[in-house]
Length: 220
Image (cartoon, helix red, strand yellow):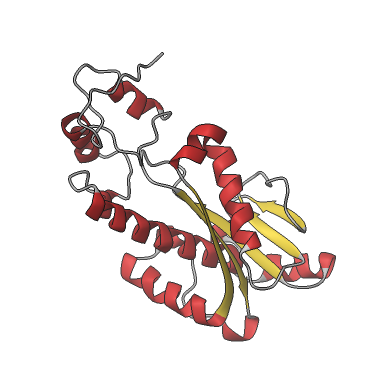
């Protein structure tokens, strides 16, 4: 199944005005922010090859990202680790989505949001679309923008905190990332509330990599 414009056409018929797709990247990693993007496509200027970001190579995503910045209206939002800890990952994801929508240069009439839930506090009508990145071109475009933006953020953080492999694993819980956490300690960009990180932090000798002090956070 390839995404198309059918959902956008139906939403526009119900609500009128521009339609924007919304998606996130980074709900599952152990480190880094959660990113969201909102994209309103111009049907006459669709970049060729738009698809769910997970189906595309990194090089293809980068090419489409640059094309979307030129040919579409794009808004990007993020929620950092402190916000993830305060709100939980779902709440932080919804915060990043609201920020992405607010960053659009023109307000849409309706949003198509990937998933089965709609954030509260949105400025317009919104519809949840399960597996939306595989069904809607606008959501597929948002998935590309969110993924590329987050990968770039993690590559930058890898330069500040080398050793965890974030430029390669984007903060996900790989074996190399786990070993680095045990060896180097926790950084300010680790999600301490996530169970795997919390478990590692509860072990004797795990340290705060920003200070060299043993981290006192326990699994309780």
